[in-house]
Length: 182
Image (cartoon, rainbow, N blue to C red; front, top):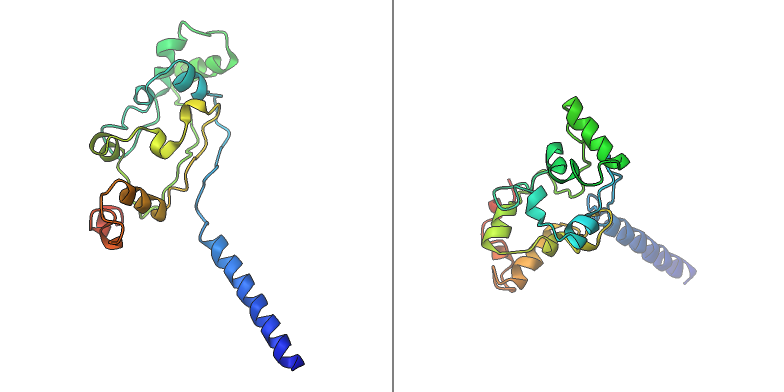
């Protein structure tokens, strides 16, 4: 009887450890909450929130193609050649422009290499606002990855927006796996 109880306890322990490992492994690569330090302190709250600047002013490709785009360094000076010119952060931007270097922004949102996402399709065809995937950017002092950006999250969004019926998981992205995977 002791051997049976010992075997049962060992089986449960191994199962619990395996379950924990599998659960953790499924989250590898998900960067939800990722908030890297950027080379220039940029407040999305100030620009997108307080000043109500359209996201597409800086992220000019969001309605044109796959990538939303990182603003060229010179774009900042459209305003900051006149506004807050003595700020240490603006001086970093001016120095970068004067030296011909672009600001090396740190990428925040990451998809696996085998997954394809097209911003324009979601902005123009679906009519989504940036906040649908990126969260309340206008409230973020420092931008951080709001969602997991995982396949299950994407499929759930497609179901919620009736791109495919909820019971038909094979059609969740329009019926063709190669639309998102290659």
